[in-house]
Image (cartoon, rainbow, N blue to C red; front, side, top):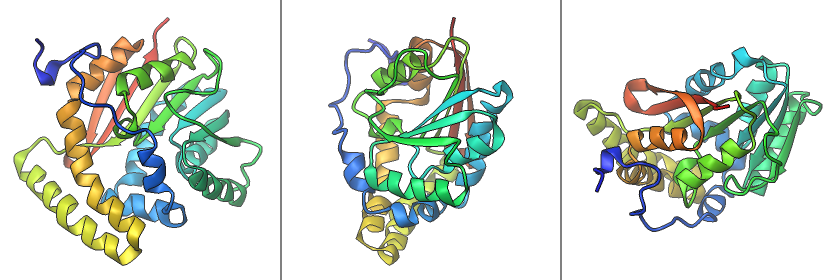
Length: 252
């Protein structure tokens, strides 16, 4: 049996599936201050991580891009500013999309960005629709990360780049200790100042990240991208290990 750190995406000994509606419930109360929350949760690094992710698709100048887990459309807006293409942003949570639509209107990008409701594991698009794809803070909330990656691969064309952003656990013990202290104590405490929804997310996030990487180590995730059909898969661990940017391109 493969070791946990090298398990392949086809490993049949999976942990119990997650409830796909959990993320929708968790984030319904957050849209008004979601962008600020993302900066707080990432210790001010979220904007830098987003740019590093979008950097991976910009050189392709893709004419049509899908941004999955678009939230309040922050990544979709950045893509629209940095590429010539049309952007479709998809998210499970209607409240987030309403806030995203306000942000799109405020930016004057209605003719470049279309926001739609949908689930990452059942995308409402035909095969090979998009020339690039991004997704942000997604795989910790889906029932089957490997199946979700295959579904993402389905809707992009051969050769299309894909990039993702996720929280990570610092690999060095010194920084991992401070990360653990921050996520288990300071985040919940800060959340109390923002209301019940903020407190729930602040209390949930650290244990959720730790559990995700116990189930699905980074080596497993790289294998899952490759088995989904992506080649030239790359990884960049950022901010002492608190952030993770991945990228690859759909094989021919």
